[in-house]
Image 1 (tube, rainbow, N blue to C red):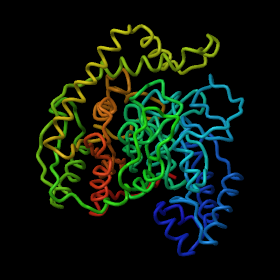
Image 2 (image 1 turned 135 degrees about the vertical axis):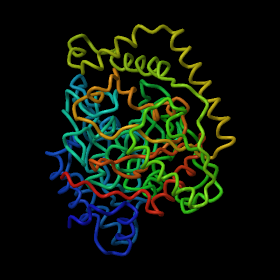
Image 3 (image 1 turned 90 degrees about the vertical axis):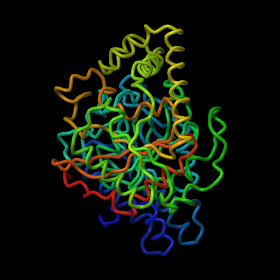
Image 4 (image 1 turned 180 degrees about the vertical axis):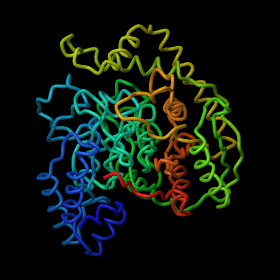
Length: 467
């Protein structure tokens, strides 16, 4: 039943409702697919077939009684190994993390999925503590791109992106502190949403503070809306979480883009060198939105690259992550992580507060920008996937992953919702992503515009042929 691995979560739930096949059928297909793709792309750190099938059998019984327990009952899902999932260790990509339990607690988003009957296939790979924009670690090795295993899947939610792209469960939970669902989403040709900060509760709190978001990684925007209706439920463990959303994220997704005011910034005012194939694919997506009735203006948000402030916040957070480790366990860390932690430990409180000032000013500017424009459209990344096992593309001159992700991390600083939507491929057949950004709390508008691209055929690319 390998064709079941091509279905979205929305399609699976509808098929269960009609009795066309069962959650056990879908779970067996997803598990078989995970087993097939794992040797090629290394998307998982753990697959628990026995537990997943037990969950699927319980879901099948509920559907037969006509009593599903929630919106995603029986849907196979995967979870990035940054988020707690009871019953097994969350190692966060690190040999320095002790695997001994007990592991008895779910992260809030995982708990909501469990309450809604999801079937947990396994935990997906991450770089150590999610510190960089590619997915490799001393603990789990290199995660590779579904379209070309010689290239990176991106990161830090690279395992989740590869798993979704290859049908090893249609949806996954990722985390995003500087682009970490959008980067691999773009490289692997799937949809990924970084919601408004606090919209999806997070516990334990991230050492990277309010840069860190939890978001859905899916086949399309409709699946992400479904997942958001599940995982955005409040949780008392997250003191910074938002109150419940006023409406279902699925309710307005069919609303289209007619009349929306869209700002199209192809290069952030010339600050970013974008590859021609990427620029052309993104422009076609923008033209599709204009053809559907959106008012599009080519213009740029009024900010300069905040990378130094981001580094201060990010590197300080990384230093905090490892602060408790004894020297012998620090020696096990990724050398690149040790390097940024050393830099982060040298910042003063005043340095950190100066970076916060930059962040607040950036948020003020984007707040004003969205008084004129409903949406901002940019490339998700200026490039397509490069060689696996490297933090930066060979010959790029970049020192850190932030050098090639200038479109993503600014919107973690501002806490805005931002999504990547596949919009084409380059001449090597590698996916290109277009980024859709809205004002804080306008997550539903991002989903609506993304769904319009899917409905118009502008977000359809060929599935991976590498596996």
